Image 1: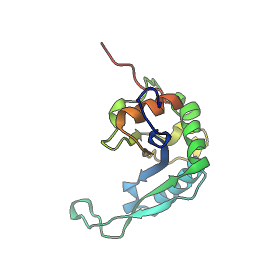
Image 2: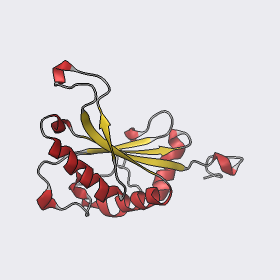
Image 3: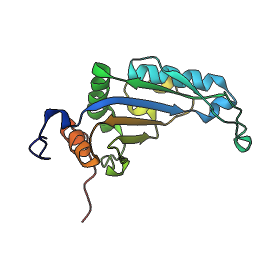
Length: 166
């Protein structure tokens, strides 16, 4: 990476800082058991207990009051982060039906990568019989460095990106 991007110092090489798994559960407004199920699934996927996220503002159109539980999230660092990244690349993503690769459009200006999942069933830890309603999740990989450096780092980790059409 130092030769590829002409970096002068080892400290300039991009590094994965943390991975944030977030599950927004809008159905938790009516039934709190859905949120408990989401917390249990996120614990199985990440190996760490998630925190409950609450609404910051009240939105009357969505029948949402301030402080209502609306989801859960977990932040992975160090060895758990690398274990999850390896597990996601080698076990979960190949289980996606008609998988063409991950889009390169998930990078922001700081070089962080966000991947949205429609279904948590791609993770082998989840028991299909216990799922009442499929819930999606977003996975944010926080990386130091520019977007093109972050892209190359994730390619070196083995994350399969879509082939560009000619």
